[in-house]
Amino acid sequence: MAKETKELTVEEKLKILYELQTVLSKVDDIKTLRGELPLEVQDLEDEIVGLNTRIDNIKADIDQLKTDVATKKVDIETAKSLVEKYTEQQNNVRNNREYDLLGKEIEFQTLEVQLAEKHIKEFAADQKKKSEELEESKLFLDGRAKDLDQKKQELEDIVSETKQEEEKLREKSKKLEAKIEPRLLLSFKRIRKNSRNGLGIVYVERDACGGCFNKIPPQRQLDIRSRKKVIVCEYCGRIMIDPELAGVKIDVVDTKKKPARKTAATKKKKED
Ligand SMILES: [Zn+2]
Image (tube, rainbow, N blue to C red; front, side, top):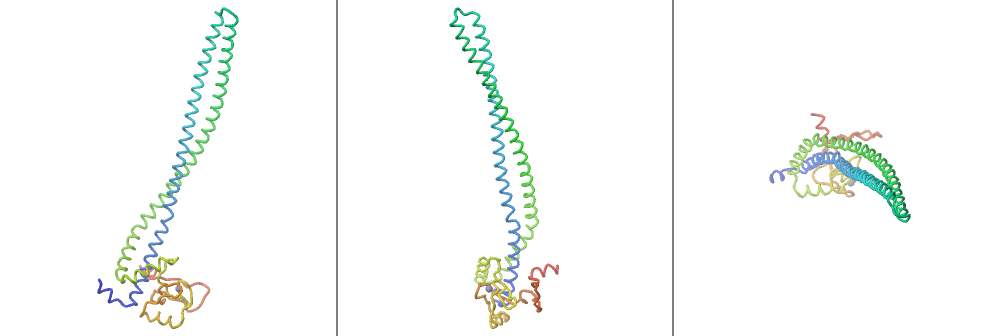
């Protein structure tokens, strides 16, 4: 393997680097495509957990209100039986004082009944409101659950669709990387990482660097075309090659339309 590396000419290395970049960019595209979906799925899952908690809380509130109503009903029964008991006792009193005392008790218990009935009405109203809230929350949850299913399916589809392609691309990039000496590969990867568009190697377009579009002096252009040295842009640091080496045909006529970019990979795809 080491011998093979040494045998490569600069031209061959540059060609391999450009091919490698095409492969790596495709892997990046796949990651980008997938990249936002897992986050959306996660957001929906979090939201659903929140909604379920909300629904559980409403259900607990409703249960509490039901218990409260039952308690008040028992209170009413107790108060009513006391009223009955005291009324009966009034028939057997010895004096007016005892009669009046029982009368006060009866009055008190009657008020207790009225108060409990008022509370029951309030609890029932609360319960009605909570039940409506529960239905609304359930509907909302159903909608979100459907969204989640859809997003999950989308993600699954993309993963299964791109899995094979990604594996192939990764294998291809490994093979290409093995051909380049570590130092050049490392600096290429560093340039790529630091560049916003992920390009570490660009071709010359209209006498300018294809990465930062700064003009290249004629002598440097000649050096690039000779393919004897690795030439980097003095402005952006990207490795520069001539369009032909990148497999690109540049239109001589300067139209307003940008010339179609044909990378080595897209060209190959068309031949398939
Ligand atoms: Zn540049």
